[in-house]
Image 1: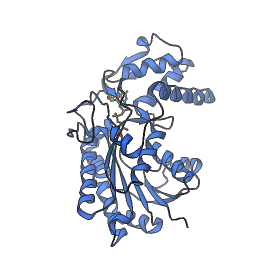
Image 2: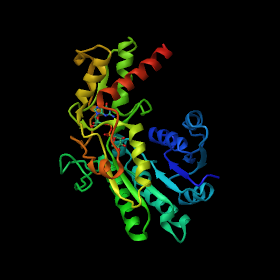
Image 3: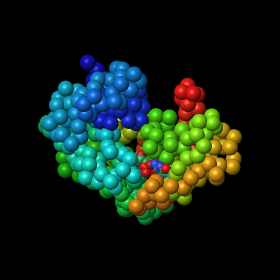
Image 4: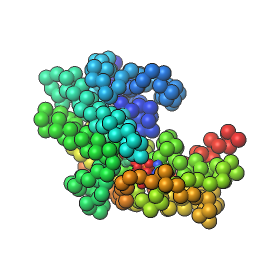
Length: 328
Ligand code: F7E
């Protein structure tokens, strides 16, 4: 048995897969928490990272978390699990609060109870989010920026963020929080805007679809590559002291810029008549501008992003061209 064992919640998501690959490459024994009966994403995990040991459990069920802790006996716990689609959180505010908010408290409790006399012996990572900045009070946003969430998802993430800080201060736990700005990849779910666009642009360029329906084109995001961001998570847990860090590229782009880059990659410069504005994709309250200042992470963790916006969009469109060609 290796002495480095990680338990990851949210193992079926984009970040869970990249983090598993990273930790396996570093010689960790990796365990993942998987939710529900006959979870359709279990097969994906088994294909991409077959070495990962899966445990059944749910963030809303403390006893299942305690059982997973006992069976995996981790030295590091990464809480990546959440209801993570912001638009969904208005229609399902209670479920979001339970999983994305209270779920953090459940994992912290499971870690604390399992760790016993020395709560700092298990290092804990909480996936906090730039959605917590919401109606931004500083530009760019940093660790000390006042939080002003704009969605039930954002509010739930604020709860988890402060609970993580509180467990660090109350019990001396090695609990760190990564305030990650949007991070994307070919593994991103198709409901998120980058993947929605990369997939539609690939299909339009192959003649498989004519238009794409979109919401607010003026919102701005700081988009980085998920593969870079999981490296930052791991680095946070290797520090002597637990802390909170903004992880971002420091560049911001609008949804229009995203469309420009994606359509541009397949040689379509005049994309206006390909995009249909659909009120169904507008949100009750919007986060207008995100741009992060990751200088603390650079200084303390030696972390910097390696993939820029254009390269990220090209990577995603190329991937979707390959997938769609395979389907055609
Ligand atoms: O939206 C606008 C939308 O759904 C980005 C999650 O990982 O990052 C993500 O949250 C922007 C918003 O991500 C469409 O209004 C326009 O302004 O890709 P998204 P998100 O809401 O920023 C943070 C850091 C998280 O923590 C979250 O878990 O794009 N937008 N038209 C659209 N968005 C979508 N999804 N679909 C559209 O048609």
